[in-house]
Amino acid sequence: MHVRKNDRVIVIAGKDKGKVGRVLRVLPETSRVVVEGINKIKRHTKPNQQDRTGGIVEREAALHSSNVALVAKDGKPTRVGFKTNESGTKVRIARRTGEEI
Image (cartoon, rainbow, N blue to C red; front, side, top):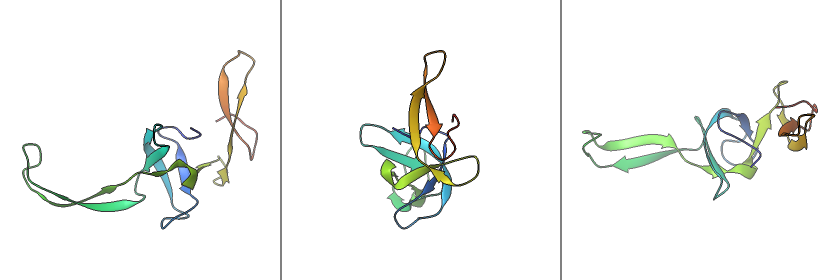
């Protein structure tokens, strides 16, 4: 996947297009990500042992990773590339600027 946990991303498609947030969770088996403050849903929950009060809980839902782009240091969306550096480890690079992420 081109995004990882704690990356700053911008939504490039959907109802929250243009919003910026931090990746909270990455679900690689379904190619989805959960972004802080993006794609909010209302969940009707029953009271249980952990949450004594039930009710309507608002939380973030997962969205497809193709609908988000990594935010470069200049604040603009960028595509992600991969290359090996001098020590032989694989690193991510920003296609817009060419620098390591």
